[in-house]
Image 1 (cartoon, rainbow, N blue to C red):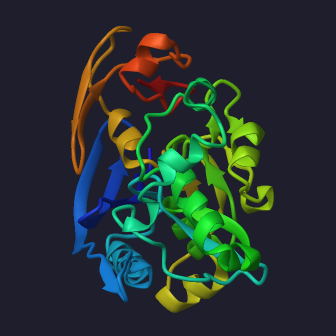
Image 2: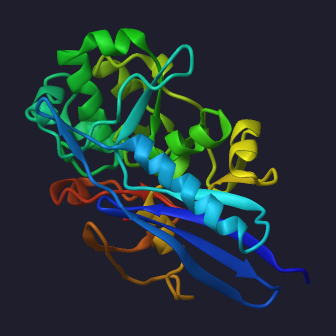
Image 3: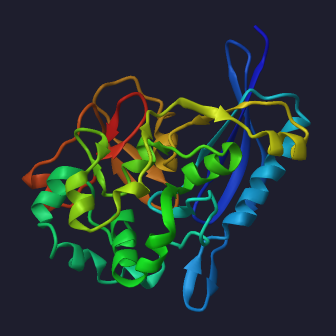
Length: 295
């Protein structure tokens, strides 16, 4: 079998890296070919992600990868909850704001004036944290509605990078499940939650299954970087879920421990586990690969 090469970008909250994977039909070899820091920038009291520099680092990783030969696909995973806002002309309105920014202070409590905690959890199955996308968007509704007036779509961070690579706007399932706006059982955007928080429905794009080919790298980027056309694939956009794909376990019942920006443990399920006990202990359900969920 001819060797197949794939290029993966893994963004954490403090650093990122480009990994080149090579498959010869029997074994997979993975090599780190590029690493860089991911540093937030505070401007006038607001904490932003430096997304243009991060996309520059993606380009640097692609340039380094081409020296190893052609690769057939690119995949990107990132941390959860944060997003970029795109206007009707396809332009990024502002740099994505960091989940640690203070804009969400008090938004969780504000949301519970609009929808009960019990109903909120029963629909989404997500842990209540003020950093979640739902509360970031509620802060825009409450404090910066003029931004939403200009907004056409929001793209979560891996989807934003995929958009920059392809020009196509989609939402990958695993990263959507970090927002607290997804109906965990139906695996679709929750109209009930979105309406309760007065978030415009037009902001949300189609949710596609993990592992779907989104499209090709754009002609402009291929010319700029001197590469051949290749697929951009919607890997598990949430970095935790991409990591959990490789858990070395064949048993049905197991516990995993994941150590990154967050340290957490859990198990793999075939359907959401949402009940009074999981609600009491604020346990989250998040989408993973191959129609699996993690709890």
